[in-house]
Length: 417
Image 1: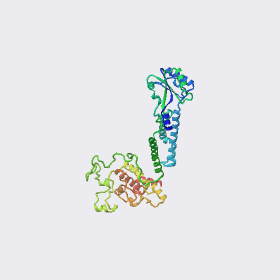
Image 2 (image 1 turned 90 degrees about the vertical axis):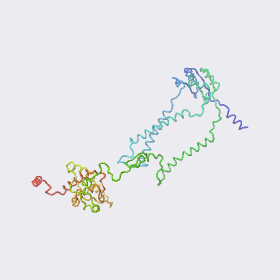
Image 3 (image 1 turned 120 degrees about the vertical axis):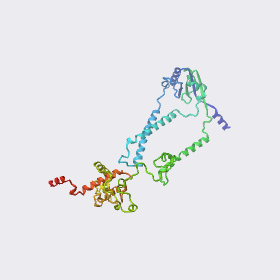
Image 4 (image 1 turned 180 degrees about the vertical axis):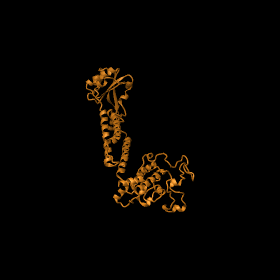
């Protein structure tokens, strides 16, 4: 019997407020002023268009929403700066070209984006919270006349939870304020409780939502020998074509024995430093026994010499030194470390190197020798010959004889003595 009474009481309508209807916006503003002067605080007005003076009549205070947006923006910006500082200076410091671990200008873009994001969230969710939204139902919508609030009528509602609310006194006040119609708004308590299946579903969804952060925390705090899991594989494996890659669009099968246009390189003197093609026996012989060219296959000019000096200083001087004596900066540093793995480069001023034909020097630059790597793919053919021409001049400056000096210059030098 008690259960039946409880169910019956729960289903009875409950008065939640009064809704007063007015014909003109002036009547609405006047009624709002009278209700405010009477001491009512839980009051709201509804109009099909903005009514000037209504906010002052209802004594509506400025909303807190701008302050919420400001706090969220400042907090988000500070959190973004702090997160980047912690990541770059503490969690994963990485020195790049001597740059500081943390620089404010470099971190402004991320902070700016976070400020915008959190400000937007604060504006959206703050508006919902301050307005008591979302609401699954509104008792006002059960009043048929309230539909005219969007066309030609003006309404004022007083909540039953207002400390001064009394059904009869409040109706009398609204009637004296000029209301053409007053209706009570009621709702039942039936259906207010959350269904059990929905409660269980939300609980399970909350438990499942904890899995991703826990999985991320585990992956961060542990080590694994397996490759990382690709969430978006298109960033690592992009559908694009690269040079010399296989493709299903068409078949690229090179014809045997063909050479690209302009890449035939028939001239053995220019491209290989040889007087003629090598025989099978000569290919297996030592470099000293091969038919290297002894003269340059292209004109030796001042421009070629200057080009050779520039290329030599870029590619050769780091190990062989500016004078070719094997005392370059890389070699000096390696000798200072004394790690036992460095082989000092040969002096280009030594007699065996000076006696090598220019073709053999060109071949050494092209294919490398011993610890020296190949530079054929980095230095053009003409630049390799330019380096050889400069090397010959460099060797001659360090090993010159009186016969190499012009007679007039030699005579002047003798007079100076």
